Length: 384
Image (cartoon, rainbow, N blue to C red):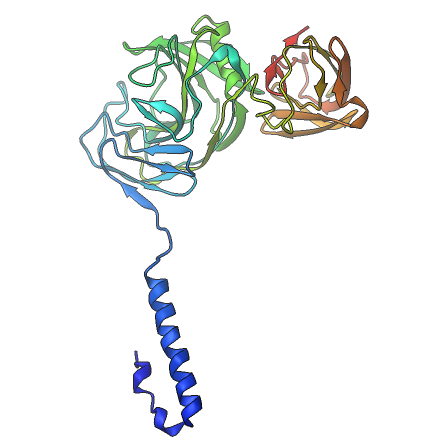
């Protein structure tokens, strides 16, 4: 490139020449400054247990624990991609790794600012979302892990592992044996239970691939407690999303991940507009259905001793159901989770008082199942 100093300034008037020289020197300095601050590139991690943080909130880990073959991940601002995943292990045994992103504590490495571990009984909601990219030339599962322990553990193996398989490719199966099915978070799942020798495992297997999902982690925790594999006095220690590859895996990616845990006294941490959580609530849910449609009346009672000034209710519709319209509330739905917020005249609920709203929806036929869990400003309500 021609240097600015080689321009024949003597051909220009002195004042214009001086001005041009100053501008060109400033341009050179600006260019040097720009090259000194390159744009942020993806970070590649190939260390066996190498990790980094993203968004100042989550930890991304390579976690190559079951093989000596090379594995590398490219970390992005919102997730990661498996850049290299060499080698294979027998499909009737454990996977070769679990590259993942997590919120909480994993073998003493806690994500920045996390409030985990938190006692299950104090959690009002734990909203999370995930988006995956899949490949065909590998054997793997796409797994979301939820860890529970009787103590507020920050290191080592927890007592119970909840696995949500959003996709599986190849001749692999969950730990243990199939024990039935369940509708959790508005979706149907195969349910498997067993032990890997170190901890108990309950697995929820999607019947077909799910590329993205928004849900409440507590729906799966509640189902696990109901099946006797955890207790509400236990602690949630971490939530993690990633892949368990047995063969290959390059190209698999977590495009985005988010998670938070809102305690009952967190003051509307579940999106309740900053309103305080109630000390108690009770929901009466009644429906009227026909062929492929239904209406629902939701009546919420404040069983606490203080007034609720502004509220947000969250619940998951069972699979095959959707909302089409509503009254006495603003109702929205995403990923099967319904959020209802009041209109002006039913915004406040006095102690012992009730407010109600309703909605109309569609369903896929058959018996109309009801939501299993309702939260009001992050507090789990009793359902009548």
